[in-house]
Image (cartoon, rainbow, N blue to C red; front, side, top):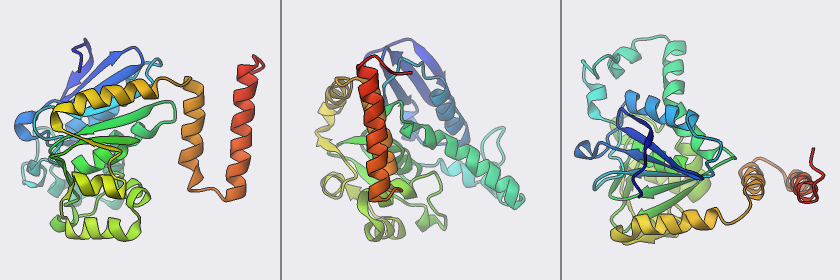
Length: 263
């Protein structure tokens, strides 16, 4: 990726912007980009910091792994410096614990905003929270060495960082349950076959392939892509007739815009 001035660079997250393309990079390769509450807050801040010019956001991780998941230090009595440990959090009220998890989830929610298309470039390990972060994006380009796994259930937990909805949407309930309940690895060929990966490429071609996809995503007019994304995202919750109505309304807006008659 091109080296650019950083809009944000903190707590293992760097955001750079080049006109219509933003790149969010996980920057702690020595720990395989393990995640922490501080990193999640930085990811949420990156989403809030995107300029209005941005149309495509690329998410990548430095080093051999995209993200090996939650830093296990979270489960130690001392936790992270300046942070309550997960053990301490468990002692809080239901409302307090719910609020904390909701804050953590903010790092994973903005990637599907209708005004952007997000692309995860995934190599090596994408485990647990790393898998869920890749699932938070609209599209995934993966290297042939990728290893997805949802290990939360194996640790006595559940995937709670917004990963369950996109996983079921992509691979179906039965396969999603099997992947989560067993905690097994899903490698590149299977990921492409079952719909987790849009494209599988050799590791050395990952960045170039993402650049090619980004260029293709930018080739259509922005408003048409925004309207199309909104239609597709809402299709699963609408009836056939409701989707027809939504399509007509969206097309009417596009026609008026093209004719210079938009409000």
